[in-house]
Every structure is written in C-alpha cells, then in structure tokens.
Image 1 (cartoon, rainbow, N blue to C red):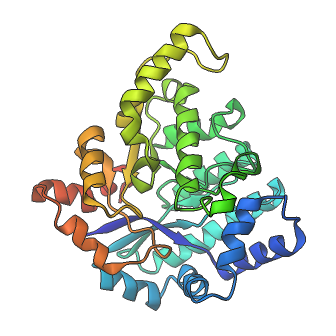
Image 2: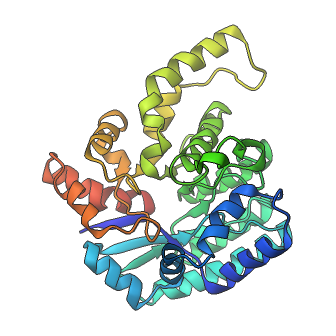
Length: 336
C-alpha cells in the first residue's frame, strides 16, 4: 500500500485569480510568482497537461494513481496558495478548504486533505486550522514565505501553538524565492524546483529551528518535502556552526537552544520523497533522520513519472521498513 503524502491541487477559480494577478500586477511585485505561473498558465504542452491534472480530483487523478500503484493521496493547495491581501486570503482559504473537504470525502479511501491557511492574518489562520481539523482535515499547508515573511517571526507563533494543541502537522511546502532573494536565481532558471524551492524552504525551516520555535512548542510537528530540502546532508555542519555562532555571540537573533539543530530535525520534522526518487538520497535520509521520519510522496502532478515507484520498490531495506516508508509513517503523523 502506497500513500503519496505531497500531492497538489488547484481549482479553476484559483487559477483564474492567478491569471488576474499576472495581468494586473507589475513584474516587480513577485518575480517568482510570474516565473512559475506565467509558465504553467501558458500554452506549452507541459503547462496544458499540468493545468488539466492539477484541477482534477476525479477520474483522471484516480487513473494516474492506479497507474502508479498509489492507494491514497494527501492533497493540498499548490504553491503559492492564497497569495493575496489578508482579507481575500482568509475568505478564499475558507472557500477552498470547504471545497477540498467535500471533494475528498467523496472518495475517502483514496484521498485525505490538508487545509490552506492564511498566515497574513494569524488569528484567522488559527481559527481556520481549528475549523478544518473539526471537519476531518489532517493539518495545514503553508506555502513557505508569505509575501516575503517567514513563520519564525513571533507574530505568527500562535499558528504553531494551535497546531501543537490540536496535534496536527504543518506542511511547509516550497514557494519560489521572494523578491529580496530571487535575483541571482532567475537568469539561469534556478528559481523553481531545480534549486530555488529547496533554498527558500530549507532557509524557512532553519529560521524556525534557530528562532527556538521547537523549544517553545516541543510537540510541534512539521513536514517538508523533497527529502528535507537538502538539510539532512548538512546536519553536522548545522550543529557545528550554530554552536560557534552562539559561543561568539555573533548575531542578536541567534541564541542558545535546548538541543542541537540536528536533534529538532530528527524529532520534530518529517520529510517526504516527493520529487526525489533517488535511492542514495532516500537511504541517506533514512539513515541520518531515522526510518520513521521519511514518507513516500510523488509530487503529483508536477513530477508525474509512474515508473519512478520502482526506485522505492527496489530499495535494499526490509519489508517492515518499506511499509513504514510507503504508509505506516504517513498514517502515524497525519492520523490517516
């Protein structure tokens, strides 16, 4: 049984809003958004196929799941999510969550869902997380930065407090780098999944760690895709350099933590294999994070390659550990 724990959805009304942003906003407003959705709302075969698949929660998606041997998808709103002014984002997140909840409940054996929340208004984001959890949604997705701001800012911490109290995970999903970061990425097309997503989301998670969020909320659960956005490879250096910075009292925003950065990544964070069907990287992540911390995902529909499941089918691990990768870990963290 395979559960795919990071699969994207975007209804037609959201895509229409994205088109309107592309038409009305200047290029300087968010170059990453323009790069990402300016392409996927275009007329190329890849864009056309993705737009068709990303809207569907019916026959097409089920057929694709069957072709990949996927028993169940955990579905949530694609990046950048509700990237609008606060009032619009709050209203739209409620509307889209109701729609996604209704659609996934039609086939509960094939779908589960995460809610979209609007960090632009933290108090309402908390209310929406509470409401959608009561509807049976399994947590919430935050598409990384919110108009260039990150969740390590204490004004957002009530969202962490609510997630911990509800015992549901937050999925920190990639976004393109914000305007203040994206400049060097764009000339060589490195702003998206090839590298920019990982840099931006890895940065976000590290900011959360270094800010002491997990000290304040020790039972908080965070899930990230793409095998942790490169961070498992950096565990030793993160610990060494964080200790050195604290000892030197070098930065006002870097203080001592109760644990090493690597310990939070092993104890509060889960990673998925989305877009990273590469045996050496999966095995390494299982080794350094723990076999219970790595979940299978496909990154549908952006990286829909049915034959990639052979990679995880053929990993040199026990069947018990393969079951953890394919479904047991996801069932535990998302309470599926």
